[in-house]
Image (cartoon, rainbow, N blue to C red; front, side):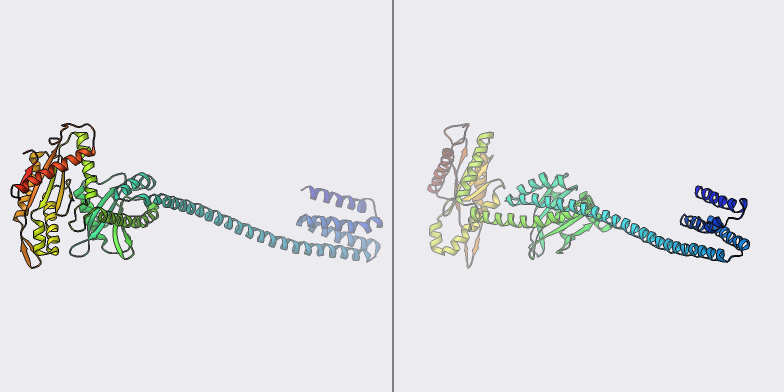
Length: 470
């Protein structure tokens, strides 16, 4: 607006000099360049209306100059002015076109920059999320290293409850250790529950484990049951299963050794459970190998009862507990009658199998808490906690009569053996009626008195039970 006022003011001033002051060739000569500069200025300022008016004034002024002086030089000056203005106008249009192209490129580059920035931020967010997941997995691997210190299943489950439970989101975890079934396939060897809500009903836990084995089969693929399908719900609803239910088969080489079942797990933690499953597979394999080695070292290879060293260790544990809680405890010493002559008559193979059968009879007639061990060649020692002398006599008589009724079909021979049993009891048969502290002498005394009772049973004709002091 101000440009127009100033420009038209100058043009008006020049016209006033021309038309108001009379003819002035000098002003007329210089007015055309001045007009041209003014028009060029307006052109640069992109004032198209003022440019059109200015060009018209220049043409009129040149015509006026020719009419007054009859000199065509003014027309040449006007033409030069118009040429200058036209050239400047074309140049300005070209320049504006280039500026527009540059602006378009700038706008395009800005959009591309914004898109790149957006993609960069998205990628950065993705990398942050990935970094969090990697850190979570790395943390899980660090925790899984602690499994290497576990040598039995109880320690492993305890570690799962302490470290894995608070880290991952799930309702209940279940480890099913498999064993070969008699008719082929797999059966439940052990089952362990862990997590916020453990399975306390042992019967339902075993049934749930059996159902998991049937549903999973022998596939190597992870099975995800969301609970939306009727079949999955019907099979697991009676176990009060929390869905989704994920079944991870734990393979070591070509052997399926266990199943990890996760109930109510968060989808965001699924990959972590995969890592946990891979770690557990190796750990379960190691625990099973350790148990096999341990069993080999503490179990007699022939009779499948404890060796003498481990038997005495367990005896010590049970006697300490009996002293601490004032529980009774009985010791039974079992001897196969005339075994040496029996062995000489039928041979060592028959003799070994007879010992194995005798040990089996003992195992079938004692409780699960009773400790059985091979004390000598044909002698077995039974530690029966929380059993007084009267009940110990009943237990011994049950073993004796079961052995006497048994007919051994060994190779081509059918034989029969009997056993003699001597027993002693704590605290009746100790000189110190109620000891307050454990002493290894108590163990020796109870074994010695059970041995004396056994010697008396043999003297009385064998195939009988004798209690110490009777």
